[in-house]
Length: 288
Length: 293
Image (cartoon, each protein chain N blue to C red):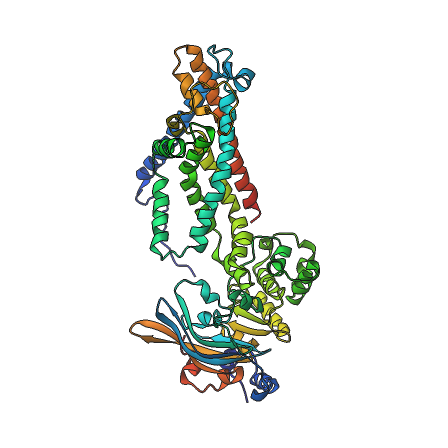
């Protein structure tokens, strides 16, 4: 079956067979570990709804991508997983996110402890204005982690595929690194506190294509040990890295825009035979 | 392919705004000149008059009725003490207030907004008003008396708003992405403030504090009002009578003997030197720590 150029682009330069092969390698539904059980999640800012009624499962050791047009609430949604929305005045989260069967928004939950286990990488690399070493050591230090700090730093930088590039200049400012290196440093910084989950909010959108590829390769590496959730506006990226993809869209009522979850399925399904017309329009580039 | 192109004339357009530009540039130079000439005249005049009295006697001797034996030692010492006390009082209170307003306060609450507006207003209150407050509240109300500590406290109140505003600016200049990054690693609010925000804001806070300090050191009016003495022959103590360098200069200029006026010029040079050192320190801190970014 000859593939057209459009089809290749639409699935991120991957062949249909490759995607299908990846789907076959995913564990069957009953064998997947549900790490996050999100049900009826609603987020509002100053009583204006930003995201409504999202329910989905995030599976352990999967890469899960959230895609959708601007303003569809995908960033708002990913920030619910480590309670970063708590820091925004006027933000209100309702519904439940069960993580290891505990409600992340339960009364006895300490957001600081949540963030230790669920790390986050931001859209724009945000290294601290400190040395490379101190950037990685910051998390373990504030959490009073045991162990030799030099080892912790080396291990985290190695995991983030940055060690070879920076081992000779650990005491140099992190701001002397290139954008792609800074982003991998931010990933290393997260890994240093030994989280279980990595949330990535458009981690490559500020990077050039080569640095982007490195981050994507890294995600495949990290998948073995971590559960990764990524927000991306780059559909090809989702197709390349994600096992599961959730498509969000915007609903406009009375001039107010609210994000909704349209469809959530395995990445090959979302990109090759989605069930919802809106998803198909989006992934084929007719909308968005 | 030969297509004849009409010649483009680059030199013959209407000369719009040429004169307006020249006049504006001239006005800029005039503004600059006004500032420089005033300062230059002042400095040259002061140096011409005061250089003869700028000697060890001025620095090491107490005041005297004989201008040739009179010095400003107690006043210089008192000014240094007041400066140190000011740093000790204003920096913790000022930075603490700024941290509260920027990092902790819910800006939607009316009392926090009221606080903000008040601080901005306080920065514009004339120093003499602070002097009156000091006299009524510290010297008489609290019964501190006309002592150095009261002087330092009143100058603290005077410059606190300025320091708070400077520290807030410095804290606000720390990008939010730094806070978010630290929070996302499981740092507590306290750790974020103490380990990320304050170190990053430090150059700005230090610069603002020192500039405010140098303003306070040159203040005369509130100190006169709370009763800095005209004649102090002994080294100052925390709870003793005192005078300060600007007060001493003011007093000397009011003496009838011409030599005292020259002595005052000498005192002004010393005060200028202290202020210049402070400001140079501020600039040095700013440059040194900004380079690391």
